Every structure is written in C-alpha cells, then in structure tokens.
Image 1 (tube, one colour):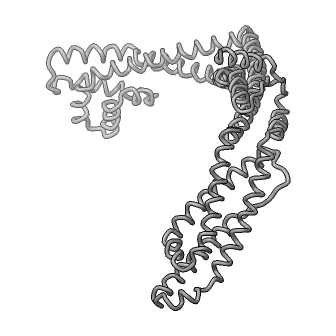
Image 2 (cartoon, helix red, strand yellow):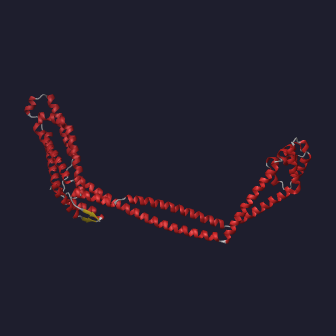
Image 3 (cartoon, one colour):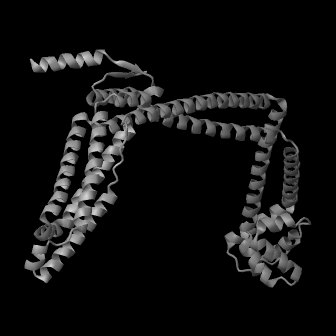
Length: 426
C-alpha cells in the first residue's frame, strides 16, 4: 500500500510540472530556496550560537581572572599551584583563540542559496575549530579542574552546547538536503553551458556550410574559365607547341646518343692514335673526343675531326688493333667521309634552332601561365573545401554528443529529489 501511494505521488508530481524558461532558472531556484522552512531554523541557529559565544566569552573572562581560593592557597603546594595556573592560562588562551576564529554574524533572513552555502561553510569551520580546541585543551582542562572546577566546567558545558547545536545543524541540513541544493545549481549551470555550446556549434556549422557553398561555387567558376581557355584555339596551338617541343627534345636526345654511339666505337683507336699524333692541336682535340665525344662533336663546328680520322686511317696498321676492330674503324671512317658527320651536324643544328624557336614562342605565350594560375587556384580551393568539410564533420560529431534533453531530465530528477517539485525547462 505504501509503495502504491509513493508511485501515485510521484505521478502527481510529474504531471504537475512547472514550465521554467532557461534564462529564468536561477531566479526560479532562488525563489524555491526562499520558501524553505530552513530559513527560520537558520535564524534561530545563529541567534543561539551568538548567545552561546557571548556567554562563553563571559565565562572564559571569569575563569581567566579567577584566583586560587584561600583554602587552596593554604592546602596546595606552590609547585602544584604554579602548574595549575599555567594550564589555566593555556586553557583560557585557546578558548579566546577559538572565539576569535569563530565570528558569529546574526542575520535577519536566510533566503538565498548563497546564504545557505555560507551557513554550511561557517558550520564546517566551526566544527573543525571545536575539534581543534578540544585536542589542544584536553590536558589543560583536566589540570585546571583541580583548583577551578566550577569555572572551567561552565566553559566546558558551553562547548558541549555548541557541539550539540552543530550536530543538530548537520542533521537538519541532511533532512532539508541543503548540501544538494548546490548540485541543483551546478546542473542548471551545466545545462546553460551545454545549450550555449550547442548554439555556438550550430552557428559555426552554418557559417562553415555557407563557406563550403561559396567555395564550391568559386571552384565551379574557375573550372568553367579553365574549360573556356582550354577550348580556345590559342591554347590548342600552345599544346601543339608543347608536343613539338617534346618531339624535338626526343630527337635531340636521340642525336646525342647517335654521336656517342658512333665515337664510342672509335674510342680505343683514337686513344692510341692520340699518343702518336705529332700536332699538339690534334692531340688536344682527340683527347676531347675521347673524354666526351658528344660535347666535343657539338663544339667542333668546323669538323676538324675529319682530317684526324683520315690520319687515323693511314696509321691504322701501327696501332696494334685486331682485324675486327680495324674493320669497324675503317667502316666508320668511310661513313664519315661520305658527308655523314656534316649532314648529322647540320641536322642537330636544325633541331637546336627549332628547339630555341619553339621555346621562345612558349615563353612569350602567357596562356600557359593563365592555365597554371587557374589550376593552382582550383587546387587551393579544393584543399580549402576539404579542410572546411573536415571541420564540419568534427563540429557535427561534437554536436551529436551534446544531449540537452538528457541534461534537462537529470536536472528535473534532481529538483524533484531535493525540492520535491516538478519542472520542465522551456
């Protein structure tokens, strides 16, 4: 039956929810706090504490000024009297320190959560001070009893009353769930923070989505410009120039390889002939052809190598070459004598001239720079789009983790638990 009544009460509380706007949560909480019966209790609690503190001050002053009775002056040894007086002084000093450390302030009303939390902190400090003074005065209290029993007991009893008040305060705080009110406030603050965070992220998402749309439009426009240029006859002519440049480069490389191949087969014979050549200029030229035949041939515009090849042919019998080598050398010299090298040099010259002309025309045509500029801009825009989309993905992932409904539910449960009131955050 009791369980059924609890369930019915819970349903009633849930159905009677009060709708509270988010921005009014703090004000609503303060209003609820001001209605708690704890307000009246706190007023009485601090008034009682103030009276006890005042009485404690009076009694400790009496103890401090109290002298040893005449009877004790006669019956107690001076040594004992000095010891007790020392403990009495220590005891009163510690009690006065306690009084100065615990300043009780009376207030007409306790109506805000801040007031309640200040009362909690004050009492926690008071409880610590009670423990500390009890520890520091344990021996002094016992020793002082020997000659000042009535006065020290009056002080001690007041400590007992203060301690009882503190115990009662803690009990009442637990009953009224005062310490948990701060949890309600913290949940309200966290909810507000999460809502602000959500709004900020949603705003950032909107900005970045707008940026992506603008960047995509910019990329589309750049690609359109690029297609227009690429479809232009000027660009087609430029591409043909580039193709021709590649062909000429291949032809030039092939020619260089042909030169190298031709003279590499003469290298051994030329080395030996260079050792017996009488003309120093011939020896120098032979050395150049042996070291780098391609470079030597390209620089030998007058083909001074031809008479050297004739001299090589005439002295071939003295160079100690085998028959196969002699045959290859004779064939190559005969080929050179049939204008092969002249024709080949002219061919290379023509290729090089055309290469330079094509290169000049390419360099003087800015269409490639325009195409490269647009391509570079498209690449940068795509990179920016990728970056923005990555940031968007991260923002949306963060947004999914924000559970406002769950936060509101946690707050509602805590409010029902602490204040026994149902709320719905609007």
